[in-house]
Length: 174
Image (cartoon, rainbow, N blue to C red; front, side):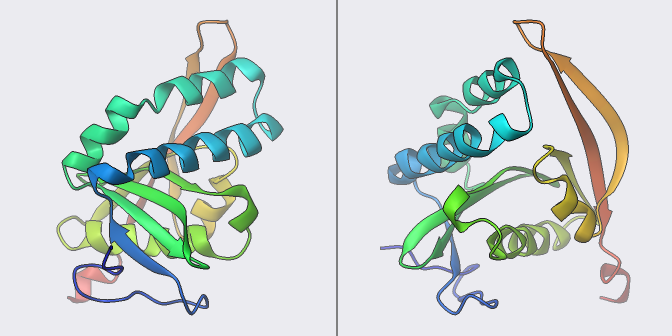
């Protein structure tokens, strides 16, 4: 059983039963299911099929497991189920996904707040690469686009994204 919260505490928001836990190797299938389900269910609304396939192939079990084993992957629990995940690598946030049926309820912001708090303990800037579906949420959270990038997939379709940053403005007063 997981202890949900950043070490030793339950994180709360407007979701009274929501919490965060560090993923364990036994959670690989759960994390992969959340990632694959979200990409398959949401990304086709924003991207051509070749780009969706690129994302599905990018988030391999080996990559996810390596991050889990390094203690960088977090799980979001709500409604008695694991409904989201996010990863930290240094000062970079990546692989933030919330299952489609739980989107629009504040869970993405909930996990982002936790990930940002973890990063801002040791860094002044949080960085991420924004997918199109999450771009608006990142803007609302104070992220600023710093660069526009593109990747041409093996099928010749183009994935465009922004590199974004957020400064820890409260850290200056810590």
